[in-house]
Length: 490
Image (cartoon, rainbow, N blue to C red; front, side):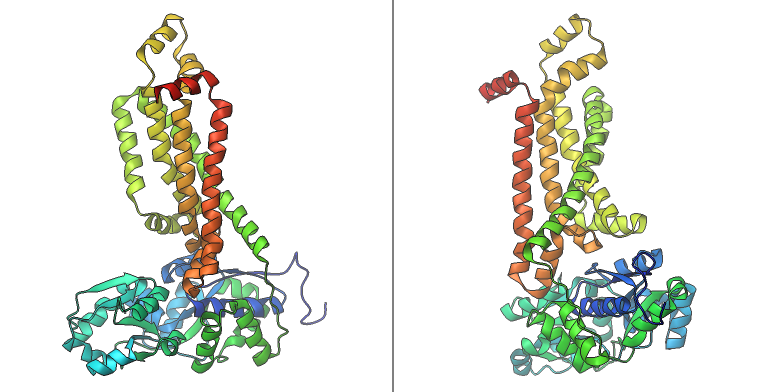
């Protein structure tokens, strides 16, 4: 094979690239994918995988080969306890984790605080220290910044800031909050295109709280050793991007709404001479792909929940004490916020569809268990006595009489679980499970109502379709006489 020729598809190395849930990270991920493919690799981009910890754990577990990161995040958040000051120390610590780090990509995207220019001028605020004199200001920070080691708690202590009205919200929504006046100060990324677009003043970090956040690529060393040619191709990004260029690329994606893949491809064509490669799916193919992903999550989790919850519901109906425990545990699971449950699953099951399916399975238990127990418990005593008088054994009474009589209640519980799963499955996109949540998350990030509706409308239609399907199943499964008698009782 000639040097540099693409490898056959079946022998080409695989590269799984991750990116965080903000535009710059997605653009850098697309660049990595484009360079890897140009070297003959089969590259897949796992886009918008929530926050830093999700990608870091996925990389260490071998579910990703590489992703873009920042040196300040590595020092201050991921490896904060080690007191790493130089790049050499940072590389040594990463090597102990089986990871490698590229040279800087050429720009520093540090944290900063910002305000509307007119309001900052009116109040005479130019430095972060000036905020001490204005405890009435409303702060709104990205959720990750609220808890980071280099985020709000440390910043508040360093500057002795008195503000108490501080709320956490999505980074992209914070800009809209600034525009509406709901918040007055927020955290910025210094390469955000919105700084100029929204007319914000970047406050001087006069106590030098924030370190340098040089953009780099993190990669698994074992993968790099097996695929040196792919790594060499990807590392062409080293020193390639200036801060001004990164701001311009972010602006094209965020403000002009050009797809990140096109932004990345055109930049690499201009800087490195790569042929542009932009493959855009039509609306129909995108919706169909997301529908398949969403249905997979919902159906697998629902079938598992039915297989487990119906027997548990029977047990709960037959054994009162056990039933209280079962219903109590299922109720506790139901109260856990869905996003928290998804994140808890990551260390156990990694990213992708598996943790999403398990979380949805757990959410589906309560309505099915409760309705099964209620349906069996609501069977009139004279019917039970008649079945016993006929000499039917307990198993036969359950299958031939009790479960058919309880079928409407059981189906209602399964229907409730299915509808819950259709809605909750949209959050699976945060951990790489796909589905309708992907365009919703991207639409929120890009302030694109069309993309949000691309996920929200099919999700709503799917929920309606699920309800209709269960109504049809009830007509087919539940005896006609039973349906009529129930209707008369109502």
